[in-house]
Length: 160
Length: 290
Image (cartoon, rainbow over all chains, first blue to last red; front, side, top):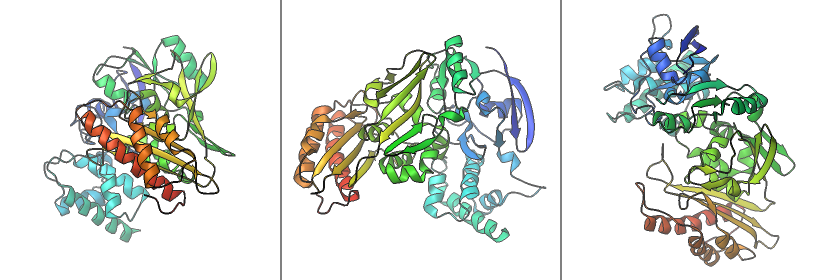
């Protein structure tokens, strides 16, 4: 395999890496950039959503994107959400609502929720459920997650 | 992960050239292709990425003709007021695809090229009588979608050929369409049976033309000529819809698999055809549907 060189704009910082051409965006983030927030829980088949990141603002399963496909794109991961030492309202709401159990699905769920709130600031519960429908939580903590997203949406609307 | 080399095409000409030079296979959103790679089943040693070719991502209206670029994502379709207005069955189908993560990357052209018997967009496109424009370094050709789909995961595409766009005519008013997908859950699910119906009515509210297509009940998604014959020229209503649904069973050959038995699929297909026809009839503005 011929190595490829790509530039990713990860959480606002450009990173140029030379890596294997069959590498997924998920493993480029984890192995090449040391960002372990995005998780591999289903073996790279796009079933679980634990690897969700935002690619040019869209929620994607980073296990189903070859790193070359993301060349030049903006990537947002859980590591980029806190600003100036303050957690993002979604992160805080997940903690305060008890929406985190084992935590493995949490980064992906929060990014899927962020994609929703970026587009729909005051979502209905059904819209929240739909937005999280690709994120499996095997602790079955969905009720708290939905409450957390609702709470974050309310808090963010006060800031606006 | 399967070993592959990677090339990115930035234009359609680039794509044609790279496919010829490398003997590679095109990928778009990757939502099916990367799963194949993960399983070592991707049928080439070279990947040519088409996902960034802007010229293949569009939704256009020209009179009654709607043309959709192959790289249009499910999310693009869902965000299009035009598609919502002229092809509600396509919207209904796109809503059932995977989850937001899948819909942000997966493409209409990819759904056709993947040629799954259960491909969600295939029944509504078949019921819209869609045609597919294929493009290669040698030129372009346009074929009915029904001729592109050859078998499970098999299309008529030749080496070096790609899907460029999909087009269909808006049926004349009054007209209604519906798509119903039966699956084991709502999110991240593959169809057990899916049905799309398009009903065009005449000025006396008879059925001028009815089109029925089914997914996950044959080697490819299929139209049902028998059901369509049972609809043509008839008065809409419970009896007509029941006859059409029974007739549809002559055009399907479901198998038993992990999701359902063949017998269950036959029963479900018959009921879903009736439901889809009722929904299409209501949307056409018809009254007294069965």
